[in-house]
Length: 192
Image (tube, rainbow, N blue to C red):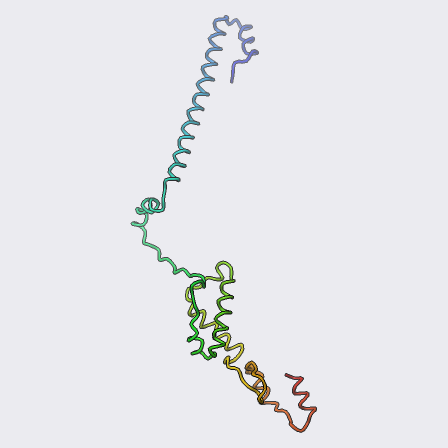
């Protein structure tokens, strides 16, 4: 509460002498100065702490942080870190693995190019693997399941065609065309 003109008037009306009013005004000024000085001192201390924190954060290196945490690591057992995967860059698919799984060398080279293009284009975590050789083997197995052995076949001396799926072969075995009946052959061709 500061000493206002209304308060001084009330003191004069109550019989206070001018000297008493001067002393009251001086006391009020000292109180305000002391309060302001305390605020300034607290602000200086707060600012000094903030500057020290900033200085400490700038000077901390990873080695320093590790040293700071040595006490914690001595008391706590070290957590096992999980192995981290990597991207396909630098990996070259082994064509011999694909050939040993049943693809022709030409088809294996084509699949290797498709494999690298596919995994290089995968963004983020989806393109990271722990074991690229296992991923390559699975890629080849899936390709064989989708399209057969990978060897081109010749049908009745015509141009080489893609291997047919198992379901197509079963259909052929269960529904052979009748060579003399053209209508049956046409129906057979439409069903394929």
